[in-house]
Image 1 (cartoon, helix red, strand yellow):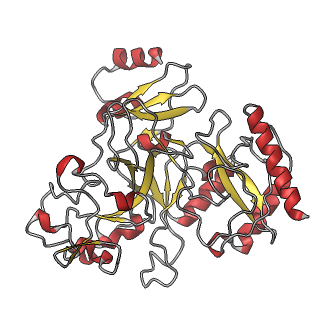
Image 2: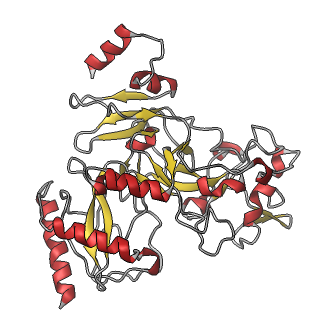
Length: 412
């Protein structure tokens, strides 16, 4: 680490050099620290400060764009604001003098700019004003648009690879940063998976922008396969945030111009007070269990086994099979990483690629794969039908044994 710093400052000092991590880090107001080993960030990784639109991904045409006409920034907290119009039918919204107060953030006092409590536990998208609106850039409904204000530090952990922490305290409800990457089509995402040396490893960097996906939508951009964010080779500091079953951050879909719902933002907010230097974490499988039966006999932990969002940073996959023989996967941490909190029975098993761990359960209809994809995954699993290795302490090994035993008992 010290050698990398010396090479940077002796070779080109303050002059930005294309492809240099130190120049990118400095420009984004970040710091990188490694007091554990000699590892440094991947050389083929580039820091970016906004989403990059890949081939075949287009924003909405100008003729379809719209913004609110609020002359007073204070009006941008009610459903009369065009940006909040989609929340008009939400019965859970607070009322103010007979008008629904749909605004997502506190506007006054010590909590000003923080996400309101009722939203911190919800899966509702956040609707914000944007550059096409009549309100000012200081409008209180532009929290994510104004960007990160928290000084983040990427640091080397003792046993989980890279992690992220804040150099200042963070208040509950405070916006931290966005998850960034290259937005690509579903077809391109599949191509990259196929071309990856390890397809499971490639898949962990992909985040499906499926918050507004609806097969009955009249918008062709929303009724088909969703676009995906690939953060493997270009992203921001949030790419290095680790998982926790007891996280201090949550990720929310954020919408600016309604015409661009297909390329909505992914915003991370604090869901508890965070002290200076405390590692930032979020639950990789948060909010994705729908229409799913509870797993009988599930051990104490993060909840029932489930199929997670297509998002992660640095983790591999465990494969499972349900009663109907359909394969799916749960994403799990890299061997050098460990879970925070109390994981599920299978979460305790931190294993290598190709792990043979099956759990007997029924999936919800949203989880079902296409027949072609199922056949491909089944063939791949048969080729990797061997437990390669088990990493971690005795607790991890016992967790794996319990998972297999749980499946065997369920078959009887």
